[in-house]
Image 1 (cartoon, rainbow, N blue to C red):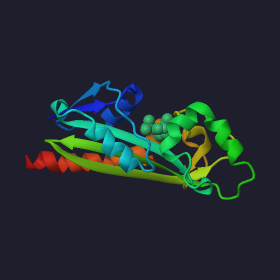
Image 2: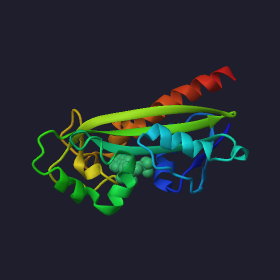
Image 3: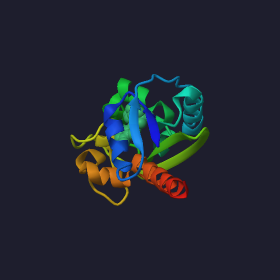
Image 4: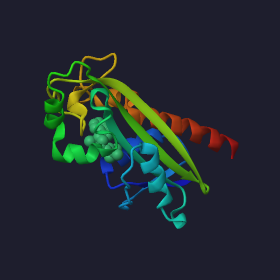
Length: 186
Ligand code: IMP
C-alpha cells in the first residue's frame, strides 16, 4: 500500500516513517502547501486540510498539532506555529511569569485518507510549563514543556523517549494499530 505524507517538514516525515516500520506500507513525502484555515480546533483545521487534497493524490496523511496552556485558556493552541515564530518560548515564559497554574498539554491530530475514506487519530500529552527554557533537543516548545511523571523537559529527553510518550507518538500508535488491522483483513 502506498501513502503520501503531505508535509514540508522532513524531520516530521522521518518521525512518521519510524512508526510505519515493519508494515507493508510505502511512505512518500509530498511537499504540498495546503490551505490552513483559521479555526478554534485541530479537528476543523485537519479536516479542511484533508478536504483540500485532490482525490487524485490517493492515500494520504496530513496532521496538525499545538500546545494548549490551561491558564491562558488554551492559548497558543491552533496558533502554535505562528506564536512560536513570533513571541517564541521566551514570550510564553513571560506571559506565564507569576502564574501558579502551570498545566498544559500538547495535542496532535492525524487525518488519514485510505481507499477514499477519511479517518482521524488523536494523541495528547499532559504536563507543565517551566519558568525558563531548558535543554537543546527537539523543536518548537520542547524546552518549556515537562511531561507528566518526568522532571526533564521534552528538549532534555532522548528523542526515543519523547516519541514514546508524546502527543504525536500516541496518535501514531493509534494509526499504526488501525493499519495493522486493515492490512490483516486485506
Ligand atoms: P505542527 O502542526 O506539528 O507543525 O505544529 C505546530 C506548532 O506546534 C509547531 O510549530 C510547534 O511550535 C508546536 N509543536 C507541535 N508539536 C510540538 C512538539 O512535539 N514539541 C514542541 N512544539 C511542538
